[in-house]
Image (cartoon, rainbow, N blue to C red):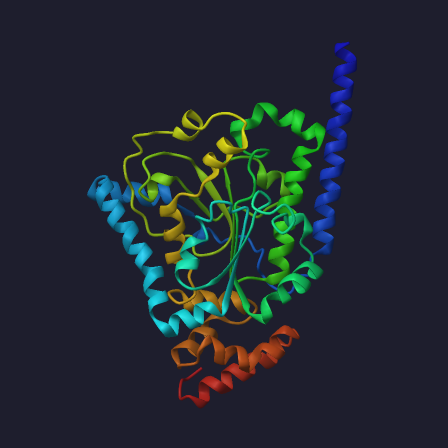
Length: 357
C-alpha cells in the first residue's frame, strides 16, 4: 500500500512539474518584448526596510505610536493636497491605476484620495468582472474602452498567497497534486500578462515570504518590509516584486504584538484569510508617497519611455517640457520602435528651449 501511495505521489509530482513548465513556457512565448518593464532590479535598487529602520532606531530610538500616526497623516496629506490642487488633480485624473486582488481597497485608496482613476478587481467583490482569468484584450476594449487611451500609471497586485506562503508549507504536496497551486500560478501569469499589455509606469506584486518566485520565474524582489516599519506594531515579512521606487519613507515602531495575524486570525475561513491579507494602511500611503506621478516625475517619465536615455529625459523636464509635451513629441516614433527619431526629436526640442544637450 505504501509503495502504491509513493508511486502515485511521484506521478502527481511529475504531472505538476510538467504542467508548471507548460504554463511558464506559454507565458514566456506570448511575451512581446518592446520594453524593459520586467528587468530585474539593480543591486542599488533593492531595499530592505529592516536595515533602514534599524539605522533609524540606532540613531533615534523607536518612534512612538503617536509620532508614527502623525507621520501617517503627513503621508495622507501628500495625497489629499494633490486632490485639493486643481491642476494636479486634473493631471492625476488623466491617469489610471489598476488594483488586483484588493478587496479591502486599502492599497489603492491613496490613489483615489489624490484623484487618480482607480479600477479595482477582486473575484470576491464581483465573480465576473473581478475574476482576472477573464482578462483579455477584448475584455478591456469592450468593457472599458481600454480606458480611453489614458496612461496606466500603476498596476498593484496582492496575488493570493495561500498556495505560496511558507506558513502553509505542510499543505504544499496536496495543493500541487490537486491543481490548486497551478491555479494560483496562473493568477500570477495573468497579472504579468496584464502588466505586459498596459506597460504601466510602475507595477508591484506583493506576497509574504514563500515560493511564488521559484514557481513563477519572477525576477528577484525589489523591496522587503514588515508592517512595523510603517507604524503598525506587528511583524509580517512581505516582499514586493516589480518596477517602482522601493525607498519608501518609514515610521518604525516597536513590534510589541509580534506575529499577531495567525494568532488572532487563524483558520481556513474566507473571513480569516481576508483579515490576514489586509494591506497595512501605513505601507499603502508610504508607497504612494514614493511612487505617485506628481512627486516622482522623473521616475515616471523614465519608466514610461524606458528605452530612451534617462539623462536626456531629465534634461527635457528641466527645460520646462511637461510629460504631456514629451508625449506629443515622440509617442508616434517611440511606439513604432523608432527610438533614434524619438531621441533626435527630444534633442531638438531641448536645444530649441536653450538647454544644452
